[in-house]
Image (cartoon, rainbow, N blue to C red; front, side, top):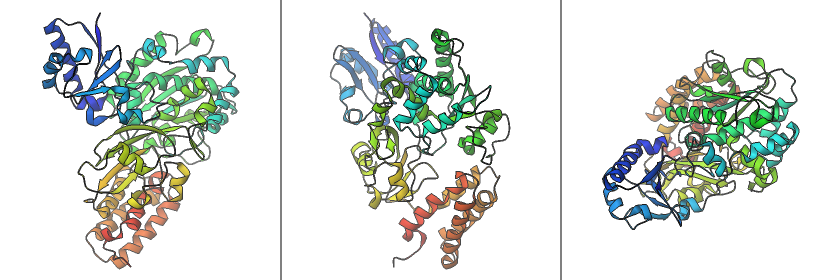
Length: 513
């Protein structure tokens, strides 16, 4: 009987040599006459241990990491196929503290299953949510999503049930489901990990959304920088269609839902839902005025649900276990779990899924292990390049949408980027303006011109010129962008700029009072 060995196909693991390690294990097994079955799974999200190789044993999966090709022969010598002792042995995967302390709902299968195998997906509780949805009325499906308290995980945190209900109750002969997979925020990779590690949970979530609102066509708008995700998504869609979980007459229900992947062209602003729809329609990615809302007049003027990858991937567990089950996780109005992405100057960068309510400090130190350099963490940017910079005095803030709003910050897509004491926050503020210059769609003046003037003013400030004039000018400019921009691109660029200025004034040449 062959032994199953798991080597991640996740692009981050691949960049660290996972493909070479998988080939080396296969060749070494052939050389030794050992029969093995190599499965390319998703990553468990512990990137400092990648490539992490797992072996299925009678006691559970045993992990070894980080494995290099030069370690493979010694692993076989140590009888790793039966869980043998080796310097890289990490013990039972599920007992690794980083993983054990998490609450994985959306990521329950990532790293466990073969990403494109429908059979493996179903064997691990996949498609149970869709099965339930097929027996419910449209209003009942929407009610479960509403009862769960699920809010948009892309950053806006808008209640998903309200959006779905609007599309459901807007009459139209054609409706659409769009998955926003244009994951462009710095320090974010949870969407990519789902698409590469468990694409079928996204496909199932989109299918349920289609049933809920009466949409027969779905699109995954994927950023062009994710070639591995494109390949895996297309394979998973083909397999789901072949197994009758997509297409016409799904599982004999008489219901139809078709799904395809469309690629963006590298514009950050196309992560904004209306610019995304312009792009999908073959136009330049410019932000639309609202109203009308996409839920009423969206893609091609039809009612459209636009949800982020993690929002849609959270739907299957809600329909499987019920809205109340999901709602029992979290705090306040932030219900369920949020996949947090730890990046930057951290010892243990990776993916952590937790119920809302844990503090930033717990995440940075209990999971992230503190800074990689061993120096104090001075600042953390949460929520991507438009998120505020938080000082150490705010690290005890609970991870909750309202708690972050109360300190003029955003939780966003859950990306956390840490900086140690060597960071120059004035330079970071300058970069924020530069980013807006580069990525503005140019439709509105406050963003297009404001960011250019902002970069020029920040250049003056960084060089300590005319601070008495330029600091007030910067604040005035940020006020205009904040209140006058058409979308969050210009409207939120002041968040990182002003938070850096307010919390770290010494880096701007401002002496303490």
